[in-house]
Every structure is written in structure tokens, then in C-alpha cells.
Length: 456
Image (cartoon, rainbow, N blue to C red):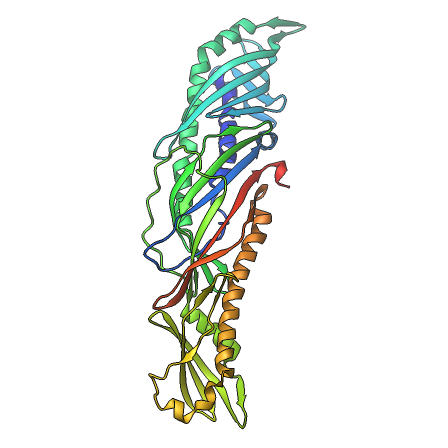
């Protein structure tokens, strides 16, 4: 008789699967930034996950077949049995407990010596599953049949007569309910590995993510901590807050190297310290990428200086102490290299990073001032400044715009939508390293993941 409880395993796994995918689904990651620095500010990433109760019930019911269990074999006990869904399953989740009411139509046939008898009935089973997660991210459950109620009391049909057999089935349910509940817990443990899912997601979060082909931009989240708040109930939804501390970085240039992955942090329930995300994003614009962009804009261009003119053949940007060094190869009225040096500066009033004071580096060619003083009147220098400044400004603007647009309606998976809004960008911590211009982008905002009909 305990065959018809087999469907409950699937039911509970679907419930947990929907919740877990909302909290921990490692699909398209949101975007953040980078730089090489001894002091990395920590970011707080808070993502409240809202699961519509009606949508959770709909998902479960859509995944349950009309016939939940059927066994027509009578070889062992002479019993054929079928359990089918009578009505929609109802789900209620509070804190660490899932309650589900399952209405069933039952049909059975028993082979006797020279004939067989059949019967039918209907009941509603009320299950209660308490679940908890240990420090190793293992999901543990304890299931009980809290109650059951006959909707149509079972009867055996013999000819034109129906014989009630309710007391016999009641006795069986009382004797078997602990075994049935233990079977559900065993199947959950065998078929649903929360730790494996979280560990896979944790490793994926530590891999570089290619963000932009136009700017050749890569993201490293560098997560340090992962926490989840207890489930909270609202009138029509469940809310879980997933949050992490991280030191996100954005690299502009080649794919960044990856360090050895960090071990998965121990599980711990905790409320986030804030409802808003606070991103302190380190960005490194590689000199190689700045060189590529400058060549695209300037290589092959000709500049007139009265009767003289020069053509830009090549550009190479490197670091020189805390300054940029721009080596420009020219042909025409002057054949050779000119090196400009300048320090990127942060314009507090405009909230911009600009290079406004490029000067010729005479240390490479002291005779240059006498032989080619006409080159220093500003036209070429100004064009280099404008190219670099335009690139930095466009890069920051584009990054913010992409983030802002993505957060308006970002589909992580069908029916799972990330939404949010960002505050203003603040730039700080500007410096030049051996291979990049480094600075920090600071911004805050709010995000939310919606699962269910409210996501549309």
C-alpha cells in the first residue's frame, strides 16, 4: 500500500529546486571591476530573492503527472494499485519548514482465489518537512505526515455491493507513516546535493567573465564570503536575501590570470548589514589596450604645422614611474620618435579622469628642442590628450550604461528576473602602475530577483 507515496519525493525536490535556483543559480553574473593594489576595498553585493507562492505551487503542479504512481503487477501480493492527482497541491513555507497538502484519488484491485475485488477512495495527505543546512552546505531534512483526511472513504466493490474498508486503511497509514516519511528524507539526501550545486557556482564565480568586445573588458568578482538569510514570509511571497562580500575587478586588455580557487565558505544564516549593494570596483586599463585604441584613432593621420607636416606611423603607451609615457613615431618633415609624458589626474568637480598636461620628454633626445621645436606648438600633443581622455570617458560611461540597462530587466533564466537601479558613479584611487592606469569606481544601488508571475 505504501507505493502511492512515491510521488512525494518528486514533489519535495521540485520545491527545493525552485528555491535553490533563485538563491544560488549560477547563470549570467552581474558585472563589476579591477586594479593592482595592496588595499582592495570590499564590496557588498545584496540580492533579495522573491518567490511568488502561487508560482511555486504552479511549478510543482505543472511538473506532477496526472497519474502519480501505478503498479499493475500482482505477482507478489495480488494487489494492483494506482494513485492519481485529484486536485492542485498546496504549499506553505515558513522559516525552515515546508508544508504541502496532497489530494489523491486511489484505486486498487486485489486478486483472490477465484476472483478479484476492486476499490477506490480519495484522501488528502498533509506533509511537513523541516529542513536545515549544516556548515558544509549539506541539506538535511526531517519529514512527517502531520495528518491525513479522507475525502471519499475507501470501499471494496463486490458485485452490486460496496464494503467500507476505512478502518483497515487507517490502521495501515498509522503503522506506515514513519517509514514513508523516512523514505522521503532518504531520497532527498540521495538525489539533491545542495553542496555540489553551491560548490559549482562558487567556482564559476571565481572565473573571468568576458564583458565587452568593444572595450576588451574582463570581470573578476573575487568573492570572499557567501551568506543567506533565513526565509521570510510575506502575504503572497517568500523572500530570501543572498549576499556576498567581494573585491571585484575589471581588466581592460587580455584575459586576466586566475589564482587558485578559494574553498567554499562555511554555511551560515545571517542578515545582510545593508539593503543596498555597495560596489568598490577596481579597474585597470592596460597600456596595451590604450595603445591599440590610440593607434586606431591616430595611426596614419597627418598633421600640418605651417609649411611642415608629419604623419603618425606608430604609438606606444607605457608607464614611467607615476606617469604615462606616449612614444609617437613620425614621418615627413620629422622622421623619428617623440616621447610625451604626463600624469593622469582626477577632476573632482567633473568626476572625470583626464590627462591634461602632456609634455615632451627631452631626456630621450636633448637635441630635439633645437631641431624640431615647431612640433611642440600643441596640435599633436592636444590630439593625443583628446584621444586618451575620450577613451577613458567613453569607457566609464559605457560601463555604467551597460550595468544600468542590464539591471532594468535581466533574465537569469526563464521566469527568473534580476532587476535593480544604480546610484551615481564616484571615481577615486587613481594611480599608474607598470602596465596600466588604475582607478576605483564606487557606486551603490538596489537589486532584486523575482521568481514567478511578478517577474513579468
